[in-house]
Image (cartoon, rainbow, N blue to C red):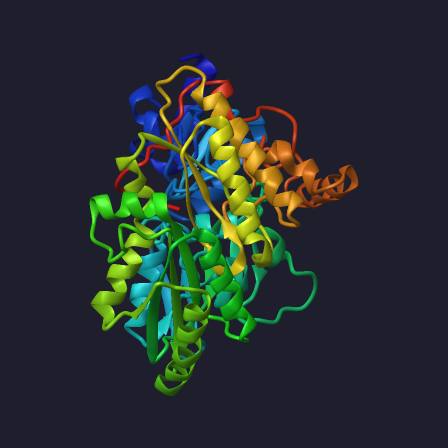
Length: 482
């Protein structure tokens, strides 16, 4: 390493301790990717223990013009945690404490590396819940959820991460520590908290988050509707919403996904089904009974061949295990995946999925669909083998065509995974130059030097990093999430 690099390591070691500075190639290897198909190796990875250390690390990078990239659990699906321009990657894994659970005020304060499901499990002991539940909630961190404004199956009824973040402690580009928002739902002045959530690490690093908690529902019922084809299942989605019902969650998996799931577990999905729709309703026991009286006939009217309800909590978990383990199960069909995250109006679901099938045939890749049907958030998953020459390039081209289909249908580029590296070239499909210039001005207000997570969101600079390092790393298999 050059003298400058050695000096950098010494300075970083003074802040976090030598054992928390990683720079050997074999150590950096596991930090070169996230859940996307991109790769790039950071110059160095540091693991701070608290906000003060994060502040000092960021200030050091600021003084020397070194790019800073924050990293949580690395489950992101748009390249958000990829250090595309090298620099310092601040891995927040040591900052994993739940600092406060306040039942009276219905809030919790946590450090960024707290795992989503761990927070929910903790507060349920007090009769509460943390509603945002990305399908990666067993592994994803609250800090990453804040950066990407993550959604999840239950965002249909309860909203995405921004609807549940009350306040943030953040480190800005010069190392200064600021508070955004408050401990209440209302705060005076501009909603800087709202601007920060979903900024994909380009504004700063959140070092604590105060989040809103909800009462745990007294009664929950999960239904499974089986359909011969995807259009019929899509009609059921519209039929249920058309009855004025907003379920807590409404998720769909198609035949290819069912095949993969049932090959690795028994989730209770019929092997012959063309699509399965999961609907979950919550409330008091009487409310759930009333909703059941509406949901069942709506499914039958949409020509469901079989409607059943989970009989107990274990049965409900079994039905959900197939949905939440779907992406990992796709490893039984192909060694790699490229996941596209787009949003379309609910009324356009069937038409868009028909065009997804056309793209599958045109590019000769199987595409499995597993998605949040209730809010039109699609996740076409293109299955491929990175070892075959030219497949990665064709896969990303096919992914771009899928995004164009979503936009043409009146939708947008992302529902929960963010823009990152994956979609930044397609921003002009949705935003004008003036739109993007205005967004850049907001970013510059938080980070005028642009050293936080550079090369993300906006067109220009490095695109997908496989153009720099030609291998995909989004491996389907156990532990993969969407």
